[in-house]
Image 1 (cartoon, one colour):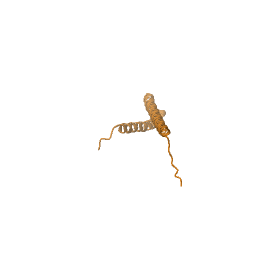
Image 2 (cartoon, one colour; image 1 turned 180 degrees about the vertical axis):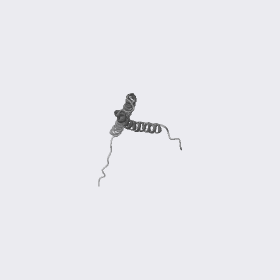
Image 3 (cartoon, one colour; image 1 turned 60 degrees about the vertical axis):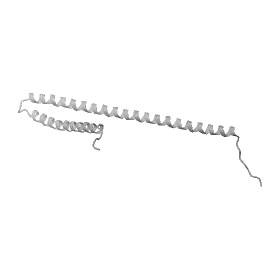
Length: 126
């Protein structure tokens, strides 16, 4: 009975080991590059979301301030009307409703601002 022996010349074995190590190194480099790209895209996405949120908040506050200015202007106009004028009463009621709406909007903006400040502060209760 003959025994089958497997022998590999030293040069081939070294070359195969070198190619295997090189392949592993290339896969590791590809993985690191992929992870860096993924992290960069995630950071860009977060920055874009934050910018859009900031812009939306600024536009909402601008709208609320413009509404407050309009209310003050209409109140000044209503004061010029004689006290017994029928439109003055209707105008005052409409202004009261608009003021209520504006107060709700300002409360929501203040609540959102307070939540944002709480989220940015570290929790030191531990």
